[in-house]
Image 1 (cartoon, rainbow, N blue to C red):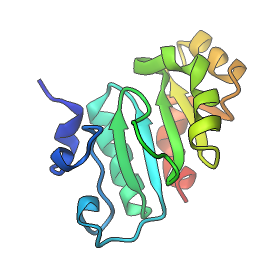
Image 2 (image 1 turned 180 degrees about the horizontal axis):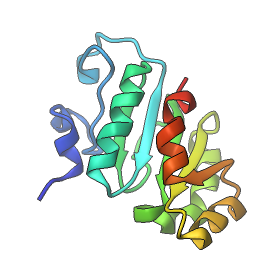
Image 3 (image 1 turned 90 degrees about the horizontal axis):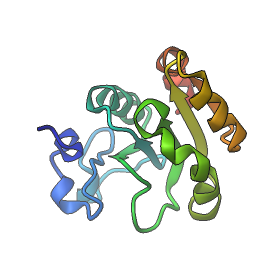
Image 4 (image 1 turned 90 degrees about the vertical axis):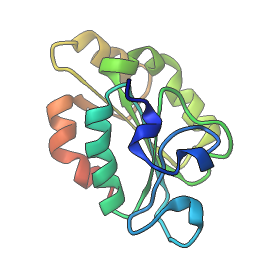
Length: 144
């Protein structure tokens, strides 16, 4: 079974067990400058690899997992929530981000047929909520 750590080869150096790399190098080596970190909360490893690629090309580190990682989140610039696989987090994610990474943009996306999940995310205060297709088409703009 594929695990979130399969997205990166340096997960053993990352205490949260999630993948994290910077464009042009391994973030655990400390030799790369980044614009900050994108945290993606999802269970979809295939789509996460696409998001990771876009984030790294834009100069960000990338962290993937099922919940916000432990430790400091001062470098987080965006938290991306997959409503299709982690929709249950929508109710509390905005308040957690306000407390732990207040400078981060909170973005949620989900299947257009699950309008109830999309509406709940909007009602929870998440500032940017969109369908899967909208997110897929615009993610390169969201990380700039």
